[in-house]
Length: 459
Ligand SMILES: Nc1ncnc2c1ncn2[C@@H]1O[C@H](COP(=O)(O)OP(=O)(O)OP(=O)(O)O)[C@@H](O)[C@H]1O
Ligand SMILES: [Mg+2]
Image 1 (cartoon, rainbow, N blue to C red):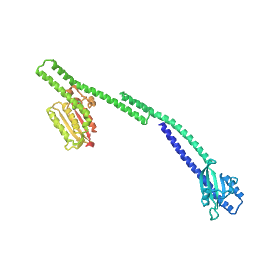
Image 2: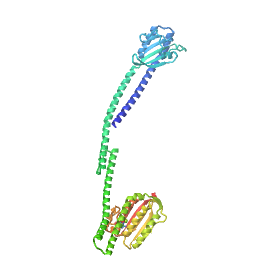
Image 3: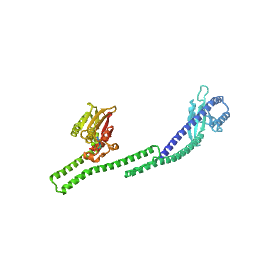
């Protein structure tokens, strides 16, 4: 990261330096050209008239020397035959022919200019020729300037030096800050990695200190939440396996005892039949238990088999089974189910499982002579299904646990009634998967009211 920052800073500084130097060079050249041109144009009428009137060449030479000093350039005057009639450098070229592209351009009546590299002085040189005119007549001679651009090179060198220094300073600063920042960033990331590795190795009790409020801090906080939830899941899984083993052991132990008795003792046929009946009953219970367990594991799969179905259909199917059951136990069964309930996008099997278990519980836990009632009502946001009974009720302190797996208020009694304690746990999972809620109100010895809802958004 630090190296990337360093490269970035170096690239930006170099680019900026390059642009600034170029701009500076252009600007300086433009100013210099403008100066020479302005001087040339000021001087041109005077020189023209001097040539015209055939002035003393020494005088012209002096004029060239004077101006050269003022503008810091070599000044040469030429007549129309390109013959030098004034040279600021001690009249060096006086009387000689000076021919150059700039001069040719000036003799055509235009200003000629160029920048050259003088091999002799190893300098950049700006050369300019301003045309002289006599009235309307062009090409009457030229004023030739030659100015060194050396002062500009010095300025540029100074600017370049400044940029090099500034780049070094910026890179040092970046390296320092980058190292501090990278350390600040990579420290917690390394810690997270180490904790994740420990977790992968099975040590789930990891907790990372959250030291900042930035993204890294948030990551650490989320990591801790994930670790908590993994621990909780593991704990629940262990408890679940323990509960299942316990539930499986009880009927298996009974079967084992019956089989041993049959194997080791002489028995009358009716005694044998009794033992076999016990074995049959316990086996049946094992089958129910395994079915419930399968239901639990396949819950999402089952609940996901959704179809759009008018709710009256599955309700009636459940009633067809439960009403005769209630009648056999001499229970009155009231129903308050509107016809033409809306259609819902749900799995009919999952829905029937929920309703059946709640009605089945009401029948199981209500004494003969009592009653139960199923009511279905459409509320503002959901459909509410309520099952009320006049059964044994549930003690207040047991209510919070009633929806937990394998939880039965009276273990022995519920088991005798053929229950595994998984019914309500399955109901809760299904209802919540569909976005509804499930709950209970109950008073011991008076009865219970179980209810669950289905959001109308799935209607
Ligand atoms: N209507 C009710 N009246 C009184 N107690 C109830 C009622 N419904 C449930 N309970 C209590 O809640 C416990 C859990 O019910 P749940 O339906 O989960 O299990 P179960 O009926 O015992 O077994 P399963 O439904 O798996 O056959 C029951 O064992 C019972 O003690
Ligand atoms: Mg039940």
